[in-house]
Length: 84
Image (cartoon, rainbow, N blue to C red; front, side):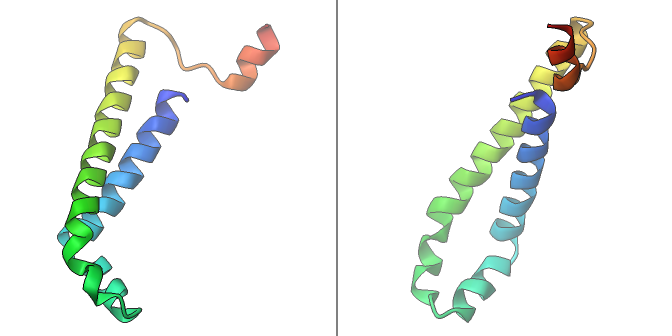
């Protein structure tokens, strides 16, 4: 998986997990479908997931920085297949 896809997945995941962790968005949805009993356990899942997505974003940024630092240009997968 290239660094662009990793970065995109990391940013989208971090944004969604932040929305669920720091706003009552998920609590309202869970309560709306009648599963209010699990609201107390959401933190056991959401905070580690938020941490994973933050680490994924940081890794993608580091990988991208290393690629740009080495002078390697962004080459599409289709161009790689054409030259091989």
